[in-house]
Amino acid sequence: MSQTSPATPAAMLSVRGVKTFYGNIMALKGVDVEVNRGEIVTLIGSNGAGKSTLMMTIFGQPRAREGQILYEGRDITRMPTHEIAQLKIAQSPEGRRIFPRMTVYENLQMGASVDGFAHFDEDLLKVFTLFPRLKERISQRGGTLSGGEQQMLAIGRALMSRPRLLMLDEPSLGLAPLIVRQIFDAIRELNRNEGLTVFLVEQNAFHALKLAHRGYVLVNGVVTLAGEGRELLERPEVRAAYLEGGRH
Ligand SMILES: Nc1ncnc2c1ncn2[C@@H]1O[C@H](COP(=O)(O)OP(=O)(O)O)[C@@H](O)[C@H]1O
Ligand SMILES: [Mg+2]
Image (cartoon, rainbow, N blue to C red):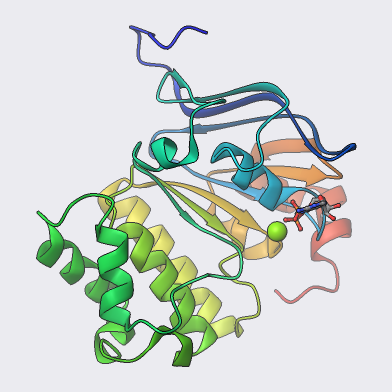
């Protein structure tokens, strides 16, 4: 497979025809998704649709059995996971997975270790500006933070590695509406002010589609709809499946 691509590709991340299996069960059935530089792109879908599987497949765990994943023009489909992490893709996985026994400060140090510590103070300041709550809790252990604070820490830790692409798996999961708004405002701010590219996986279709430039709907391992975020919000099939009766 060729790794050299002289022309800068339009898409920063390009997922093409990806099929991922758990044993004999096909969880992704040929998924195509593109994320362009500077965009917020969301992937929405119900529980079990395959959202997390797609995010994990991009990191090579599990591996795509068919199809291709390109990042900044390089084929990363079979690249080892630790090498993918070096490519400035940062991930905040579902369920946050911060280090519960480590303090807020130590968790943020762990994130910075991917990039070395040359910009540590500057990046720490940025994270604390974005989430002042974390600064107030700097010496507190991760496991004793509230759900919302843990989510802020997970995002902050990802940011400490100076990513060009930030991938978030259900940051709103289990959080109160006010906290969800704070988290989503922070994502918008990062995108607007820093030009950070964001791939956001969400069940919370309303907030995600309002925030995102573009969105994809995943149903049972298949992308059934794609379009601009606001446009998808108006689609009757999206409203019926993901919004009606939901909390707006
Ligand atoms: N480790 C696993 N082993 C077997 N099946 C899995 C595993 N993880 C997820 N699945 C299955 O793959 C499908 C997609 O799951 P997942 O990607 O977690 O969906 P989502 O994140 O959209 O809720 C589901 O049917 C789920 O049961
Ligand atoms: Mg999931």
